[in-house]
Image 1 (cartoon, rainbow, N blue to C red):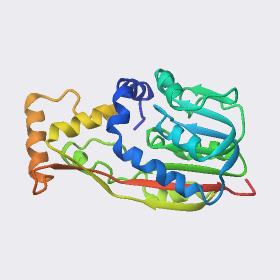
Image 2: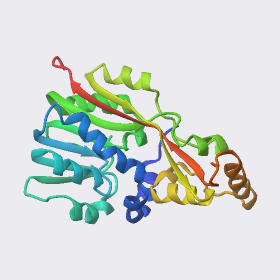
Image 3: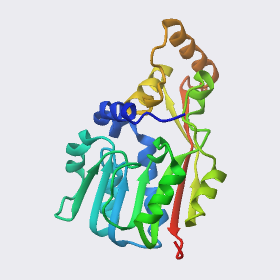
Length: 256
């Protein structure tokens, strides 16, 4: 199933003002990604961030690593004002808006990074190959995605969700052009007072780009609320939503 990038851009643009407040899991991953890379290199000639969004991870990168040049890419040009508030802008900082699977990146990079964005790509193996061609020899690729169990509660009740590649599939794709230096798999549960808060959370982080809750009848909506509470409540009456992130640090093979 092809991912509609125009729809994704629209949903994330609508969620841009609320994303930083709601994206608690994504923000928890920022320091974990940083720590995967820190032991190996801290100064780079040129860093490219894919899917920088509102700039949360961008700011962390600039606080923890040094680079002579920075390039920030995102699908939504509407994020530029938010980015400009968060990042350190110099004459060696560049913005490149557009679909990262299609846009032309004119440079070579020592580090390409992507926090919680590659799951929205249509042809991941092709993009990984492209990253290898954009990286300098022994350059690094640092990113996180999510496993097939991500948001499992919503998927179980609606049948709606992204088709997340498996850990084995990621390893197979990466090892064609990269050596996997580190990987980490996590299970992070968020708790909400009621199921409607789960839907609000998904909408305000842009995840409703997968159509969760859109066009539901009143009965379907009520059934979702009831079943969610019945199946995924704890003893305190809160309901659970589970994220299952997968983090990778890979280095371009010397022969690539």
